[in-house]
Length: 147
Image 1: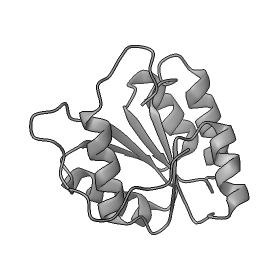
Image 2: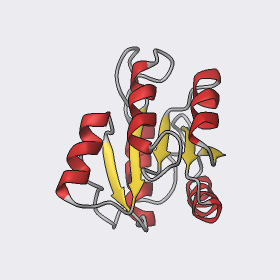
Image 3: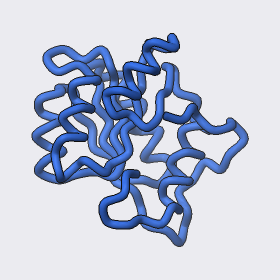
Image 4: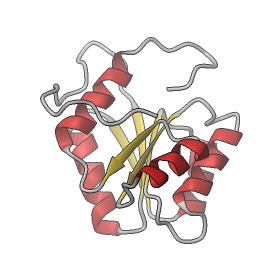
């Protein structure tokens, strides 16, 4: 699992590349909407879910390329949601990003074990998230590859 990239990176989706589909999942409506608006401002398509079970159903019905998941979700926490996304063929190869207030090394290790690719501590630095999404949008995609 990688840490966030440097903050001096580009803030927009590549104009000539594919647009990423991103799902933001956070039970805090304000936090979810702010993060979704941020990602949308970078030029990506965004869906927002406030409930982990609803997010899982939506993800399986219409998979995204990237999932930004809060860890402290009720019902299925972000770790369990990540495990289930990794276990489903529809979402197994998506990029999973933890967006959480939990930033200790043990939290990062638990996120990695649950299947997360990246770990952001709230509040997310816009430039760091933009750079990472830009890199993901530019990366060649192969069937069966994660991210």
